[in-house]
Amino acid sequence: MIVPAVSNAFMPPQPSDPTASGLVREALAQHESSLIAYACSILGGDEERARDVVQDTLLKLYLADPIRVRENLKAWLYAVCRNRAFDVLRKEHRLVLTDNDDHLDWLDEWQPDPSEDASKEEMLEHVWQCMEQLPLNQREVIRLKFQHGLSYKEISSVTGLSVTNVGFLLHTGIKRLRKLMHRTYSEI
Image (cartoon, rainbow, N blue to C red; front, side, top):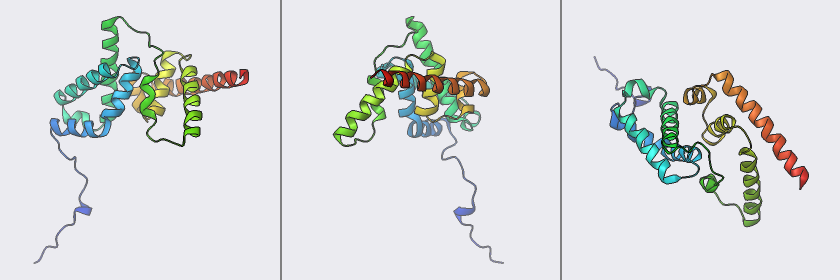
């Protein structure tokens, strides 16, 4: 009896490398730059310290059980990165973020024509100035949702808040941000 060859198209997807080092390589490829940006937002734009935090995060990933971590890798990485960044701040007794907006440069991945670019920069600067007026917990969930693309459940895992609380903070934060932006544009 002849057995037909099985095509790879019918095989269930397998993790590329089930080892700890494979998981770290996967995390580097998929999440390194966004983790650095997230750590930068917590650390007041200090990219060097943010890179150190991400390096510590990846070291913890290497030491973690790959089977346990793989299923929720993104949320796990953000939670560890967040905790490590706050550890750094606590160690330095610096819990207040600076008004340095240099850490937002990574948002401009494409360059429109100069007139659009100037207008976009003004609008972005205005949004971030208004964001700084929000409470820290609202700023954090807004950044996790819109800058880093995390789901409510992932944000909940990262911050330790309930999914309901995440939704509430996002709703009230966006509502307040809208009012702040409208108020400043009305004054102009």
